[in-house]
Length: 238
Image (cartoon, rainbow, N blue to C red; front, top):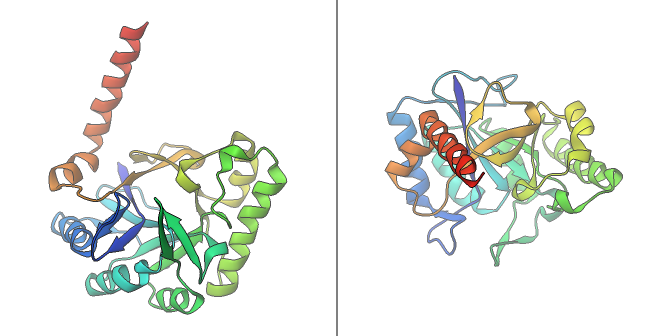
């Protein structure tokens, strides 16, 4: 069976770009998966990712303050666990998302979310660096270790999950990543239990994602058809 891993960024009262969904949109997504009887994975209480039918993991990238202001009340309302991949250099500061300057979670907010038992914090590098542009392994290791150290200092654990910023990736990282993490998310698509840990995928939900799109994009058959279509295109090009 396949595990569904969703990727979000920002949740606002009103969307200003495709990476910002509205509060109503996010709550409607939660209601949809509850109605379809999905099992939400809580990495604060479970030792790893299950890959059973209808298991789902909800993730957020960067750690925007709206995750505390808007997302946190919704997940508490429905008792839904999430993972936040945190860009630790920006804690308590601001960061740009598609040109929009947004506040990042501060230490107090991180602690409150952690204490709820519903939010697991994992690394997203320290400075949100584009890893495909860095050839020096020492720089990459420092980025990741610094992030892990800061998160451990705040919440008391070292997460075994890592998400590369914007899916950017450098093969030189592989030996180090295999030692440090159980799951590394770097692609868009369906996560399969047979995937190697360092090439796991997530499904990115953007503003105005319809219910039809949600159904298709969380259905493994859709991705198999898509793969067949891509294969046919490649054959015709030859």
